[in-house]
Image (cartoon, rainbow, N blue to C red; front, side):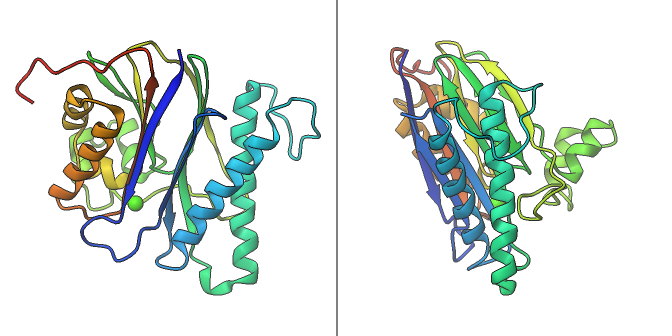
Length: 262
Ligand code: CA
């Protein structure tokens, strides 16, 4: 089963600049969505640093026999360590950049990144960039946002639908850029033949609900078509933020035509 993927980023309908970045390297099996914070000439720098640093470190660590720059976490597999360290190095790199460019002091970035080897997926995230697993039966959010509303939902104080419209829905509890004190979330899962893996910034998940994302992915003619439709739908719904989407799956399965009235 060969991995295929499509990705797209768009400024949206309201903002003047796109502070999101994405990376899609099927050879390394690496997919990254980074959502920069801090405004023009800061957010886009931060998300670019993340994408560059992660790509560089993952490319450097294809072979296992290398000196490890940060502590190796024995509770994680090799790819989990690669991603965790890549994100921690990105965090440090943003903090270093701020030291020499104090005008960017508010910059930071959320990130969701995954490494795919065959059907095995290792996933890392910080902030509210998300990963979803989508198949003909269901859509499942894999990552739990590092956000204030997600904490309230986890404690049963808010329902997921209340969280979607809450005035504090954009308040995140973690981002890359502080240069330490990060709790990178790492997960592993197995991708089955019919599964699609979706990575996105909150410019998609905040504008298009899960049911509509599922319908579009399952009715699209290809991964590219799905990605284009998802970005278009986010913009039809207001496009209030930059929108970034990566969709990945296996080549030997055609996408299923929809049986519904999508
Ligand atoms: Ca955003």
